[in-house]
Length: 495
Image 1 (tube, rainbow, N blue to C red):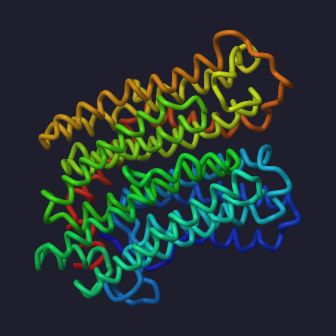
Image 2 (image 1 turned 180 degrees about the horizontal axis):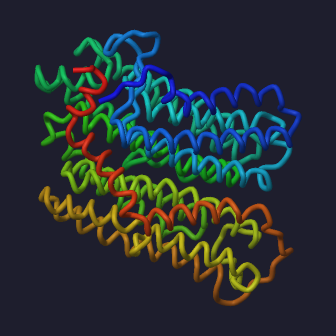
Image 3 (image 1 turned 180 degrees about the vertical axis):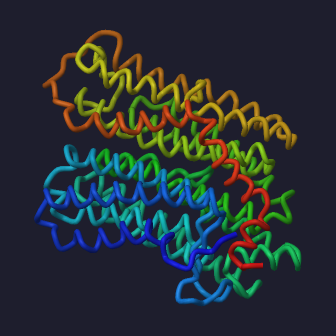
C-alpha cells in the first residue's frame, strides 16, 4: 500500500469546513453564498472522484495527523468504501444545494443556512474517513450540531416541536456513545480501529467486549434508525424544508449504518454467533416495520421516510450475513439508497408543493400539469424497489444471495419480498398523485430551478444501475477490505 505524505486525502474534509467558516462572514449576501456554496460542492465532487481513482490504483491512503504514527496519533483513512461514500455524499449535497436556491427562502438563507449545510457535510465526510472510534464520536457531534441548526431554522411550530425530540434522542445516544468509548479504551488501551482489530484478534473477544459491541450497536442503531430505535425519525425528518430533509434522509442515517458496518466487519468479528445474529434479527424487524409504516401512511414524505428504515434493514442484513456476496451487496445497496433517497425527498417535496398538500388522497391528475415530474418519480420508484436494470437491483440480489449462503433463509426471503411491498408503496403514490381524477389546484407553480437537481440525481442513479460493470471493480475492492480486515490493518499500521 502507498501512504500519501501530503494531505490530499484531507481535502474532501477541508473544502466544506473552510467553506462553512467563510460563508459565515457573507450571511447577508445571499447570491454570493449560493454560488460559493455550489462551487465548493462541485469542487468537492471533482476531488472525491480523484480520491476514488487514487485509491483504486494505489490502494488505501492514510494521513497521520501531526506526524504521530498510528495507533498513537490521529489517522484519517481513505479506503475504497469510505471514498465511495464521500463521493456519493458530495453528489447528493450538490443537488440539495442547487434545490435550496429556489426552495429554502431568503429568511433561512440569511441566518446561516449554507454554513450549516457545509458543516453537516464536513461532519459526514470526517465520520467516513476517520480511523479511530473517538474521532468518529467527534465527527458525529459536528454533523449533529449542524443538523440542530438546520432542523430549527425557520422556527415553524412543527420544527420546534420535532426538534426537541430529535435533539433529546441524539444527546442521549451521544452520552451512551462516549461512555461506551470509555469502556472500550479501559478494556483494550486503544481507540484506533485497526489496532483494536489486532488486539481483539490476539486476545479474543471476551464477554465484556461483546457487551460493548452490543452497546455500539444500540448507539449506531439510534443514529441509523433501526428497530426499535427508529421512533424519533418519521416526525423529525418531516419537519424541516425539503432540501434539509433530503440531506438528513440521504446522509445522516447512513452514517449510523456505515458505523455499524465498519465496527462489525473490522473490530467485533470474533463472536459473530451473538453480535451478528442479533444484528440479523434487528435488521429483519427493521425491514418489517419499515414496510408496515410505508404502507400505513398517506403522507408522501412519511412513506419515503419509512422506506429509509426498510433500506437500513436491508443493508445491515447484508453485514450480518457476513459473506463476500452479502457485504458486496450491502455496499452496492448503500450507495444506491443514498442517491435514490436524496432524489425521492426532493421529488416528494416538489410534488407536495405542486399539489398544495402532502396527503396523496387529496392529489390527482398531476400528470396533466407536470408530466416530466411524474415520469421522474416513476423512474425513481422503480429504482428504489430494485427493478432491473436500475440501481437497486444488483445490491439486493447479492444481499439475498449472501443471506442464503449464510443459512439465513427466512430473513433472505423477507428481504426479497420487501421489494414488492416497497414497489407497492411507491406505485400507490404515483397512481394517487399523477393519475385518477384531477383535483383542482389552487395555483400552478413553476418548477423552474427545482427539476434540474432532481434530474441530476436521477441521471446519476440510472447511470449507476446501467453502468454496473464499470462500478463493479470499485465495489469489489471496497468489499475485499471489509471481508479481509488485514488489508485495512496493514495500510493503517504499516505492518
